[in-house]
Length: 286
Length: 328
Image (cartoon, rainbow over all chains, first blue to last red; front, side, top):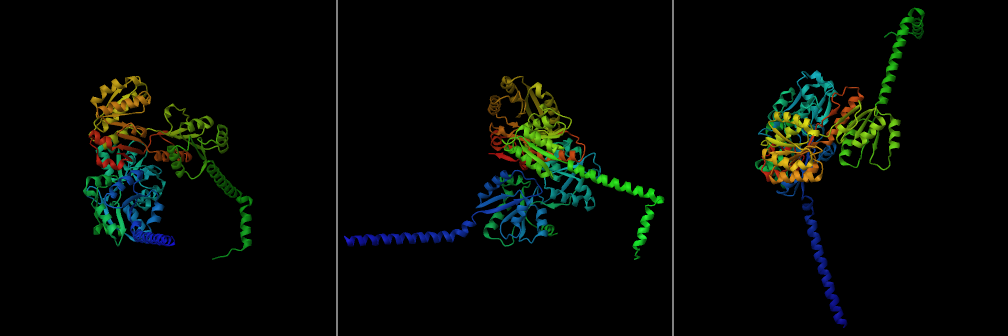
């Protein structure tokens, strides 16, 4: 009786030992995979003060869906500039889809570990021009004083571009303008045409679109000033790339080569990406 | 540098206030009085720059959004009253308005506007998100942002998104929408679209009117005509008939997404809040507000890609950047 009791205790203790060893192995395996699990989802952070993106949910869901076909990638748009800047400054990891204007500004103001890798392309060009369009009755810059300007960019961006366009000596006029932020460029142009604003700051391509859709509306507008050519949004990443970021960059680079990818990029006003050339690098370093 | 002794200065001052120089002195005194008065006046003006917000119901998302945007553009709001709160009643609202004596009251929603009009119709009232604003009592100090996008804007977006849609049908009632339709026909010509209207006198006419209209057009444009959109049954009937002949419906409110609208174009609420703030700022700055009731300047677009594919409509891919929401 005692013997059989001892045997059963021994078996039980052996079983417990086996279970414990198994649990320990599982734990060790889990710990060894933990860093990989932490990196499972690579996030592309997006912020663009040049357009008033108010379709975050749509952009996020469309880009998440696209990127998830190629790996554990996700897309995160930011609506607030301060939050985005706090997030990006000083970081040594991550991938960022960002306006070239904002990237240059950040580079000037903060020590940045990131560098531009790709630049957006629209109709074969990596640059765009901003146009200040006004009603025909506004024949010169002085007549703009105190008027309403419709724009899809942030207030800071709009003022910055206007100052660059008109010159610092017109600062008082730029400061007197009331900026009406609208969801998109075409809204800004229509706001001038239909009397809700006196002027609009938009891309040249939006103005071309307006001419294609409604020539009469286009003809009642006057182009008062134009900006220098600036780069379309860029993709920035750490100087030293790991395998995941490299593959993510390849996904973006090839996005414009498929109709599905092009459709997603159209939501951001582009149709492809290209690697940065020397001229583009020089522009960003200016 | 020469140092003038104190005695010399005192002597000069005495001379200044003597009879001979009295006239010069009085000019200086008058100038000082004028400067002080103008300072007092501007101080007084600043004190008068008061704005309050009267919100029909803060728990409604759109009302809350307009409120937030308006607030973000105003330096100092004297009060914000939520009519949806159970803690406020007419008496307390009247008391609060009277106490602040505001220069501008921003009214969000019809209920807020009607209350502001009742208690402070002589004040500058700026409304937005008011349903059927044309039916509201309008004082000479009433300003606002209408709910409806300019029809020219809507037609331009129809053309931009669907370049092959050339004939658009509209059901309308002569009482409410005849004038609107005539303007739409003119606006549509600018973008190369033909508007074909069929009038109805009551909701029972919808079926026969659509039977005649749908074969002639590429799409149906639903407008907020109270005879056409009189009840849910009418709406269901319209969508079922369009679905049967595979004709897309362009609508004006997100609600129609549930019925199967292909395109919904409405006003962007945040922009409306910003426009209302612009009017309020113009009033405070004594600037003339040229357009008392403005159209919204921003659009919100919902596109049903499922329907686009189902009906085989040619969609301009470039226009996708203007779309806020896609239904798949």
